[in-house]
Length: 294
Image (cartoon, rainbow, N blue to C red; front, side, top):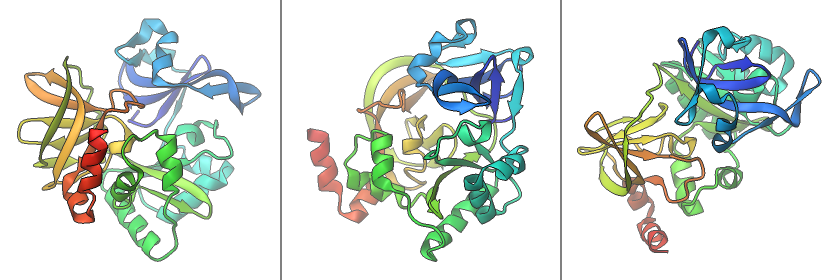
């Protein structure tokens, strides 16, 4: 069992962070809602609601589900061919990539997609960078379209100015549209790092990225005196090694190290990561500084 697989327990669907026993996971879908599977109705929930369910297995924002409680395991890679047979949208994306190690996650994997649901596609290990390069070339050659940045901006409730958001998004090559189907590409490599530290408070830091794992979960931007970790997809791929960045988030001390957590909540309006190198190159520094003063 790997990161981005799903498990089902008593008609509740959990997104897997780590395999093992217990399984570390996040509750995503619960009964009673606007999505239908086998005659049952379900709805997607926010992180803030998750504590209401399976309380005995919940701690610090995560669920820890004993392996014996799992009724069904949805393997993002192994189940791909099965999903492609019933889901034309997933099939279009899979046929574009045709890579050795790929899969699908989210509502498409577990059969709870709505008509307008994006395809959350997964590329494993070295196939992720191969996939990003295929997307770059696909957009250049008009085989793919750029995503609807305005829709993403509104959906993710991004607080940065729209033009600054788009400047970062355009160089990520992890979102696109193929034949009317919107999709994201998500990375799976090694085990997910579960970070638990002592919260100090809100901070703003600036520095040059000396090491980056920009598409990991959490995304890592290592500065000389801080590690910046992003737990929200909004700031995945936001900066690269050698770039000067500015970040605002929650400072935690983890095993004696200063770690700035960005994405402590999905709708954390006062948290961000930006590449100052990119903004300088695009002539957007004045706009960024003005936004900070508001």
